[in-house]
Image (tube, rainbow, N blue to C red):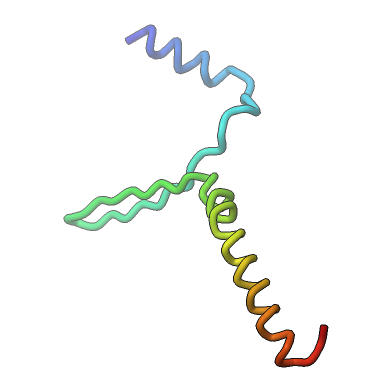
Length: 74
């Protein structure tokens, strides 16, 4: 038990490490019968942009190419 306390105190006194990832956002729902905790990884928006960006960009290019003859501009 004392070792655990000492480890905890040492961790509190350490300088914050810049390489550690940010803490996840936590949303809690507490009711009488259900207790739910949802953790959202901070990297989710970056991953979502990485996966969704190229298909959306391709759709925009196709849409612009399809509308170009209809509008008469080059």
